[in-house]
Length: 267
Ligand SMILES: Cc1cc2nc3c(=O)[nH]c(=O)nc-3n(C[C@H](O)[C@H](O)[C@H](O)COP(=O)(O)OP(=O)(O)OC[C@H]3O[C@@H](n4cnc5c(N)ncnc54)[C@H](O)[C@@H]3O)c2cc1C
Image (cartoon, rainbow, N blue to C red; front, side, top):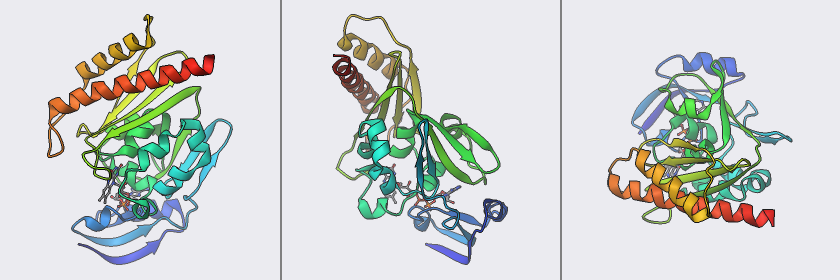
């Protein structure tokens, strides 16, 4: 159970940051994960008055506030159009609408769960994290960092000439995934493949374009490369070998889908 001694709605990011430097205090996202922890919180720091609950789209980017809910992401028309539905596909299996109405982008990315669909999804994009003190760093770098006491302010997704595709494998519809895979095909034919729920944190494979005779050959090449390099582990949802196999299957499917889509657009 979680107990909270004091509650403070932060009036500025500086105030939130100052409060968060004390070990007993905790920033609140949607509290979905926090409330399952066995902790005594000194001051619960609420960021909901800081205007971080919007998604702003410009010609070149999306700026996604830390208090944006997963449901807002899922329903955002601009993100849906930009990713060809990949955002919705990544989020729709996460428990249910009620949970997604509460869980936030800030809480999800800060937590960097191994099983995170959210982390996998954004890792395949040109995505950065804005930290109040730490400035703007790539999501990939953030994912590797240890947990600290900075405030995650927003995610910044730079728009690229790219096509995206998301898949996950689950033992049952709304369970935590056995493996996640987000793919991006860039304009020059190179790929980014992010694989999560290994069950370790998502990792990114950057695969340069290859001169091959067919989409099938390209997909097989990339799948073999990912399978060879990926580090997987075992837990109750699947063993390491099964996950390695799935990483190859999902990579192959993603490349075939994105090559077909590109070919269709070119015709
Ligand atoms: C039963 C269950 C099943 C789930 N299944 C999935 C799944 O299949 N796929 C998936 O991707 N996710 C899944 N999740 C995770 C969920 O989507 C959220 O990521 C998670 O609940 C955290 O989001 P939150 O907003 O509730 O964060 P909270 O619980 O409020 O906070 C989590 C942590 O983040 C910190 N924090 C929050 N906001 C900030 C900020 N702005 N700056 C710094 N630190 C911050 C908090 O202090 C805390 O340490 C599941 C969660 C549950 C409970």
